[in-house]
Figure 1 (cartoon, helix red, strand yellow):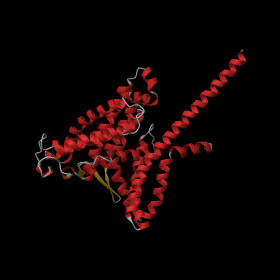
Figure 2 (cartoon, rainbow, N blue to C red):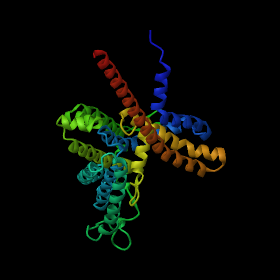
Figure 3 (cartoon, rainbow, N blue to C red):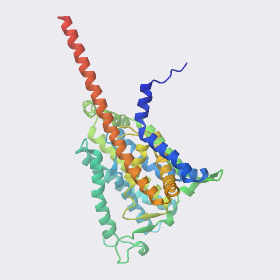
Figure 4 (cartoon, helix red, strand yellow):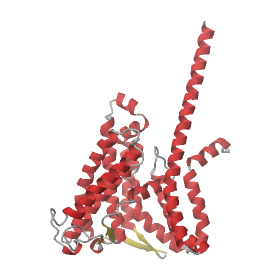
Length: 377
């Protein structure tokens, strides 16, 4: 006979998944108000999982290594976009174009990830805010390269993607040559739903890679470093090198994830397509129940579904309820940023609570030891 869960265990579960529960409640209220059909919502969710899940998964390893949410993943997104610019400039289309963009973007993302990892090692305990600032810094370099170096120092063969002055890339880059090249590689229809099976196979392969990686020596080292750096260092684990590798892998995954995202969209806002990449990925994984110190594959999938389900239904619900779609749009932005703030506040509170419990347990243990010593005398 199964035991009935205690009130304490129920409270713990509610506290651990509070962000996800709030989002789920908001979504449940908004679905009937949006008046969207179930088939439409399901098709949109399937498309958005295929488009965004890879980017969210790129956050898992840095969290496991104790570095929090890697907002510096935008460096990988920038590298992927530079790869796409070269692919469009050289007229490489289809899957060949995506592979070519990845071959250019991945080495660049590895280099950027290595630089970011070394910087983050100098800012221990403040990795998240530091990674956010690193993203801003490299964004300036990216803007300079794309706006001035392309067409001047870096030759542009395709004048259609260049600005009228002869150098710099256009604000909006048409990605028709690679538009949904991966999605359409293996597209199936089930009950009126179009499922980009090839994109899902790539995401499933990444899940298996993450599961396998966690069991490797390097994966175990990352987990140990995330739990306690001092103990890991005493055990002979190269703490700094392990942390750098986690950031490098995360940045490389973000590069591939951005390519998957952009090929699905079919166009690229050259100067700001990467801006919100880290924000949306972080919001999704936190909404899925992850924290700044613990994340799983389940958190990634749950977060993408919950966050984007809200993004689908809330604007329409706001329009139907208040007669103004902008209210729903403002609410969507507010909730997105609020999810990150709320999750980080809960993480800080939980960390403080656990520290207090540990100190209380230590005091009780010390008192007990003192009592035993008195009795011995």
